[in-house]
Amino acid sequence: DRRGGLEFIVRFFCHPERPTSATNMLFFAFSMITVLWLSAAYIARVPEFLSVALFWSRVSLSLATIMCGILFLLSCTLPERRVPIPAPFLLMFASVTMLVVSVVLTPLVFYGARVVNDQTVFLVGKGIIIFVAYIVLFSVSSFVSLIRKYRMLTGEKRLQVASMLAGLSILLFLILTTVSLPMFLFQSYFFIAFIPLYVLIFLMFTTYGIVKHHLFDLKVVATDVLIIFLW
Image (cartoon, rainbow, N blue to C red):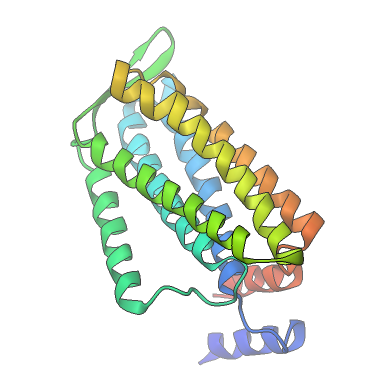
């Protein structure tokens, strides 16, 4: 297989002594999905794109669901090289994630869009509860996983986890206090537009961990990016 041969050559010359790290790949996947999610969220919010706003809003929520799932896997894996979750549970988790993605792509979550005061406003269905429940459940689970790792690890690895834990703590606090609570208590969706900013704050803390505490092997990440383009 030509592609398999290219992959072997790239890995052999760039980092033959280190196989692909699950932590590296999960962080790369999280970053790429974040870029796609921000793009979809922006298009959905621009009044000039009202005719396609409903479609892109649903795509945005589906990408947000996948992001949350990857974040959970990353929190369980960091800083190891393999995902420590048994295959049956991993398959169950993937199935639940895809089920939620399927739901948010239907009118059960967003069933309409209109422009109010030069802003695109979406009509929200009861299916949004499924999306929010998934996000809250696995975001909190990610936080708990990082807390456990922080207590168990020592030295440089503990510092690596600490930077990501700090960013995730801020992200969860902002989402729970400005998005989830207002949504359930007051049916207010005003702060949903600020979620991209919250995610960027998390990425800033994670980037700090990369640079300061060598959270990931950047050479390995760069090689994996090259391999993806070769495919």
